[in-house]
Length: 319
Image (cartoon, rainbow, N blue to C red; front, side, top):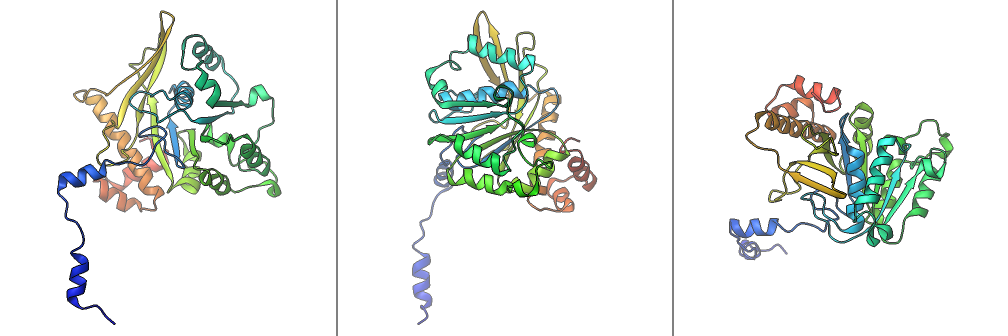
């Protein structure tokens, strides 16, 4: 029996009317996070870095922050969590010196929480052959390495851990299966990758609709004589998120103490504002393209020429 128009109106009238202020308050409730604005349980965050960026230093402090519940700049954590850091590249002198500085001067790096929750695997120290995570051996090794409370897996070089074309076909495991393993456990996957066509292809093929992309670029204002730094550009996770889209992050060792700091770029700096706007546009172009938008649609949405979209995608997001 069909409901009468009066009954239908009665059902509609059960909805509660809200003011704009009430809706804004509701929108501020965000899902649980591991690092606010950057890393969320069961999600994929990809840090794309340009040449000359101090991304490795940032990666180590990111892992330390998750393991010791120490905020990284404006990005707050929500309790110490078990974190697995996978390092593929050999320890370069600069990298080794930075880790030594952390061990000597950073109290949070040597804290009990960090030692308990941060698990570091380094190919050079283990003297293992290059194991790809999308192989049967690599997938099994990853699952065996996860602690019961692991909430984050950080990979230092996305392309060195996935898609090894030299592996025999029978030893192949689809990347999607690895992602499903982590997703079932609510584990966040954090990938670092240099800007380039290979990284773009990998992201579009496997991560297009699941990743939160963050751009890391060199910061000429960082205290290079005693430390370093970078500029971090990301997209907002919500309309009412208070965190800045772009920050300047730095670290230094001064008078035997380890310090980190951050600031929002000055809005009156036209050069900075142009860089920020350009980085935002590049991120949007790649995100729309990964979502299946046509170049003509992207250009119309952003108010730019289609050739600009094509050039940005061809150069890996750098125009």
